[in-house]
Length: 407
Image (cartoon, rainbow, N blue to C red; front, top):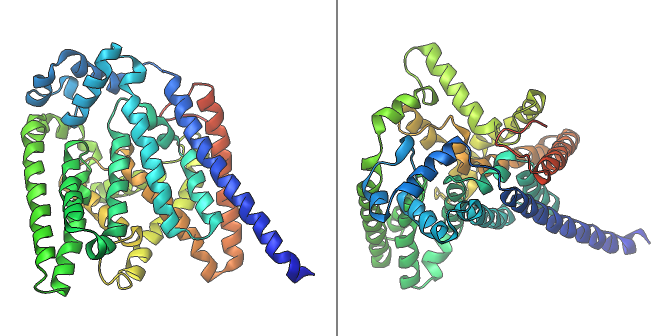
């Protein structure tokens, strides 16, 4: 009898997990919409961006430094200006693209999670972690480029997961169009630079393994040409207009310092801490410390995942298991060169879903080491996420969400 009932029980569990997954997806979308329609006033950084949107004409956006020492991809800023102008720069119009791009990024990450988490409970947990992240809700309705960064990161990852198959099965014209379009994302998101070399690396590795493959050689030329062209356009219309010296001075505390050994390790620790710990909530500090315990498993998996999968992937970079460490090292290098303030959570928001992925992966692999320890830690992590989801939900639905809410 038990054997006969097992399939029905399994069907019941699968049905419950499916319904729970749909409910959690709907909950995150609802929170983003509630935050968006709350129409909280523009805060300082948003107001500074709005100054340029309001004061500049189309030509000014591409030829003048932005007002108030702001940095914003010019094509994206132009799109916001042109879209919101007919609505008299209404708050909902100014933040509309932020909402759309964050929801699109969420859907893209749901797809990525499906590749990695075959267990339905693990899949549900990853999706739940989005509604437990204050920043992933908050930046769905802010007049800044950070939700676009999350989307661009997801688009590159989706391509990397499918690159090998596309190179074998896709028509040349379609694949060429994709490879030309990916570098074009530089025009709307600066974090494109962190992913730009990854498809090229895979193309070169494929070309080495398949000598005299003219198709691959042409694809490499197209991709490099596109990167050079759009990189030059980005420099002409954006990078050269930034007040680099002033911004570097303002962000000096958010780079890796080489002033002394103590300053180096302190700034390195701060950067890694910010890159992994500040994605759930920061206040009260007790909840932040609890989150630190869980993301520690993610930090460990950052290295374990790379070294245990790179050979399996034949030294290609085609999954988050290997890509995560490469992007992490790029962030460290750019921080050391004082080119990118990786210790500021919002400028590295695209890395937030990566940390959520790594954390869950790090906890899941505990099952191979000790099933009992795994169950305890997994259950505690699930309870933590549920608590944050409910608490953040209450704050958001009340229209009181900030980028550093107090639970």
